[in-house]
Length: 235
Image (cartoon, rainbow, N blue to C red; front, top):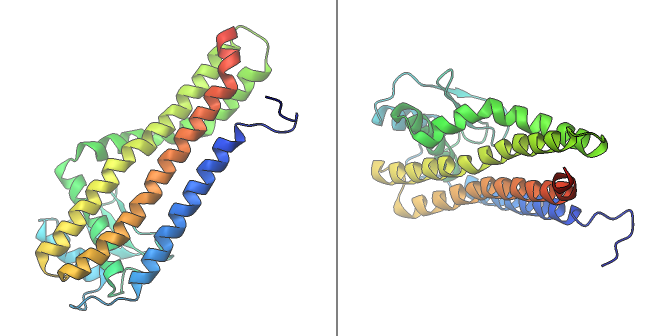
């Protein structure tokens, strides 16, 4: 098959990854905004829900703080701080409680030594370094003519694979945190069953963004393998 010189067919993989991520992000935002307008029956705010959930789990050394922005909620295991965004901290929507409970799920994972969370934490520095150094190594290997070119390419692929592995190990961590959140909100009585169903939709949509991120990373790795296949065989 003939392709014009300026067209790299492997860009299709990049485009597919971008489209998947955009669709997942759009789904997450629309679902969150939809249920951000639905007040929970108990009138509990995201902060209050987080504190109740943490204390219910026997966790008293995690602070709940406000962080600016939308959907910037996260749990910091190093400082044991659970940060809730503008759309969560003082809001009483079922979406806010779902996000707050999800982050509490991470705090509970941390306290109980949930293995995938520990693995992900250990991968953070190597994944960040790998994603930064991968393409420079691969490009050097592809453009230099020496016996070390194959080694550089393989080293770059290994570095990028660590970043992909981080994306993959993130999936069970996020799914587990969401599962814990839905269960806790239902058992605690903070939400009615129909409200729990709405919260599940919010967290499912959020989980899709992580699935999309992992799929995009895998497609990027596949593209790298295709682009470097000839050079790796030659060396």
